[in-house]
Image (tube, rainbow, N blue to C red; front, side, top):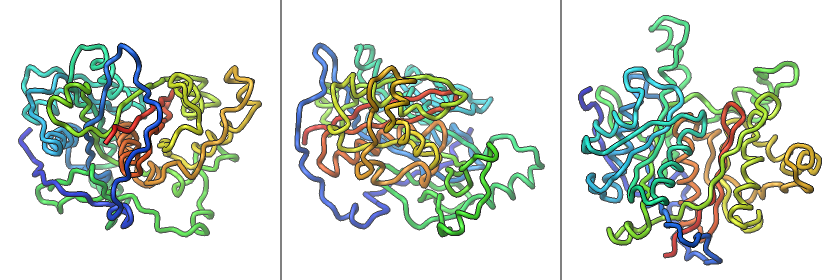
Length: 392
């Protein structure tokens, strides 16, 4: 496919005025989570497209946009990238290995290997941790990892004209919503895409009148407390610490311990964070009190409330987790302070990297040391990861 995106880049643009003006705070360092005889893996930078509608493009185009943006943002020579990994959920048949197609489209060497993974809503998490594993084990030094989803291409049983009308009606423009990791670009024949399009203009009274969907009569999920279907891509540059230092990069954070879990998908479908969080804390030898910033995937309000409920339940811990006591309720004052999937929206294959980059950026901006990112996935699975601020 010919090049159809014109890339432009921007300085720090934020949705919150205080965030734009606030200087970075010096990190108060506690103990490090570094493991003996194991390479440190750092995240140098991350980018994403605005999460909106790209119905005239392909997933390959969005993934390529993030790779190109990641090359420019920290100024990375293409030849130093050893491996490229992307996650996606709904594969496009012409570009099933979207990581390889995007890498070639972004003019990486044809000698740079790339593969694509899928693990429902934690596909980008799987791509990222696969890259971490390759670097930590010494198989490579530099990896670009990410995820992409184009929900606008999901088959709908209507004519093309009706599909276009329905997709147009399901989108709205927002004047705010950019962070420094957003790559903006122009689609020929269209306006430049600069913002996420997820907005929630309704009042609580209006939202309360909406009819629940899915399971009746007990369902609490409505259109107002669910993430819109949306398109988008994200990518991260992860590097062995010694390589990053040798190349003069200013790293944002260390990517530390991570855990994957699976459980009963019938009655506990989206409780992955509940199971994964205590396991990764134990692996890192930390407690909930040690974590300064939590980034939990929130595609539905009911889902995150269910996780909070069972985290605070001794009965659930004893009957389902083999624990004597509850994990404890997540500190709300530390949770998703900048934004969340419910409002930014949730391109299935891209959210994982956005979560971890949000955690890294919060640590850097707020001067804290430890963050924890967690997400659920269809099929009764979940992922969690500890992130440690890089010393300034």
